[in-house]
Amino acid sequence: MSLAPVALALLVLVAPASPDAGSLPPRISPEVSAEKVRLGEPFTYTVKVVHSPDARWELRTLADLGAFGLRSSARQRTDGPGQSTTTFRLELALFELGEHVIPTLVFDVVGGGTARTASVAGTSVEGLSSLPPDAAKNGAQLMDIKPNADVPMRSWRLLWLLLGLAALVAAVLYVRRALAQRRTRLSVVPPRPLPERTREALEALRAEDLLGKGLVREYHFRLSEIVRGYLGERFGFEALECTSGELVREVERLDPPGVAPADLHRFVDQCDVAKFARADIALAACDWALGYAFLLVEATAPLPSPVPPPSVVPADAV
Image 1 (cartoon, rainbow, N blue to C red):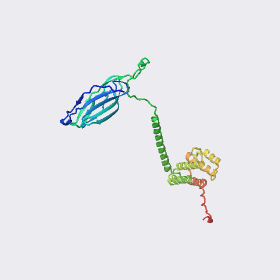
Image 2: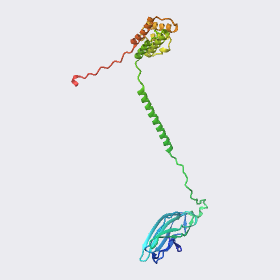
Image 3: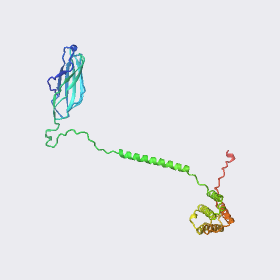
Image 4: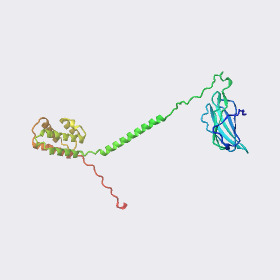
């Protein structure tokens, strides 16, 4: 692409040169590779500066280029016997239709006297449409650059987050339940054997001395409840909910070893007479009822589990 010549730009020196700046004034020649460009197509803006060899020219960073976009920049210096040439090449692109002026370039000049700045006014470039001539007939038109917009995208992040929270809650609940079960296992004391608990209840009844206090009816209520509770738990039926007749019939049906039906009949009848008829029961009969309860527990208590004999190691195996 041929370079179109442009008139010499106006040079503005902000700080005046000192007497030792040298006799060679700087000459600045800006050139643009094309005065009309299609939108988005790159073009070259060249600024050539002929200056004193002891001076150095640096281009300041371009902050705002307006309708233009900077693609690349380059700086090249060539030193001669009496002068130096620094060439700045900017590759630009225009993104708006119509005429637009390239922003002013500002240079820092160091050496050859007092430090100073110089500015070069930009030249005008016209932006042309990048569509073909018959684009309007086909319904095509240029659209302005739109601002950034949020584009919805499918994401599983929320689902994974919810699954992670659910897993965390499940793990916490599992740990709490395991700890609670462990505490329950540690705190639960296995119940003592039924015969031991029944004998303890009978001894406690005897120690209260209800007969000595004249409480015969209460004495038989307590004694009947202890014996019924023992029979129900020992042979697996609801003895506490049975009537006297149902209790006797159920025991006869089960026919457990160690239970004499006649003695059980006598015990039940004596307790019923004392509880419901409020009859006077002789002290000997009261003592017999308590003794019968102790004998019933002894006769029906389950045998302890046999302890396996220790293993004998043959002498020849040692």
